[in-house]
Image (tube, rainbow, N blue to C red; front, side, top):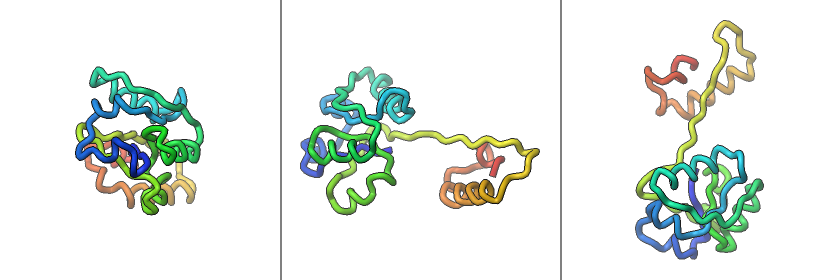
Length: 143
């Protein structure tokens, strides 16, 4: 997950952005019930900061548009904004004191045969996320 804003948004111009800085700008975040929302709010709570929630959205395009209009800083999944970043319509704001990461668990009954689609999915996961796997990881034993 990354935070993005219009390239001319004031926060983007800072040489270094910390969570404390983010608390002073409106956030464009997912609506109630979203794990992404809970994750970013937890980052603020862990630092005893109160975020300014500018908008709660369920639509990716709406979040991107609000960020492009300089209405705040949007929390987005990187694949959803790659094109806008490449076209310089949005800029990623790196946060110095803590990345926003979401964990993904994959569970299956190892006594049951997997479908060809499931095998293909696990192959893709293994190929793209192998650098995260290690022997102690529960995911390593599944793949």
